[in-house]
Length: 99
Image 1 (cartoon, rainbow, N blue to C red):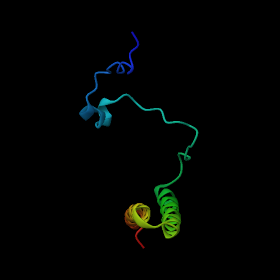
Image 2 (image 1 turned 180 degrees about the vertical axis):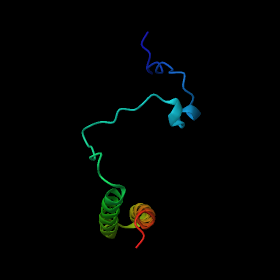
Image 3 (image 1 turned 30 degrees about the vertical axis):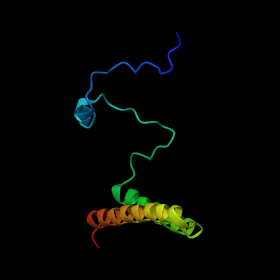
Image 4 (image 1 turned 120 degrees about the vertical axis):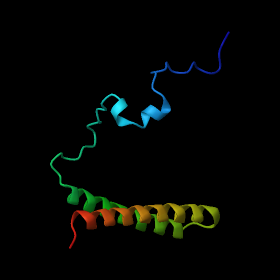
């Protein structure tokens, strides 16, 4: 008899709550496809993240201008989330390098 749904994966005996605790998980080996050089300082990373978020915010805003109705509202919501992330990164940058 053919079974339409596959069997669930074998349990690794880790509860969903334990997955949130990094001390209980085995070490994760990151992919080396995209890798930031280990010696890059925090300020440089924050500046780059801030610039990337600013660019994404402008792109989302421009794209929202081409839309109408609910899709426009969705895109403006995405743009607002990007902007909030940019503000958080800017605040972190101010903490790292107060001027």
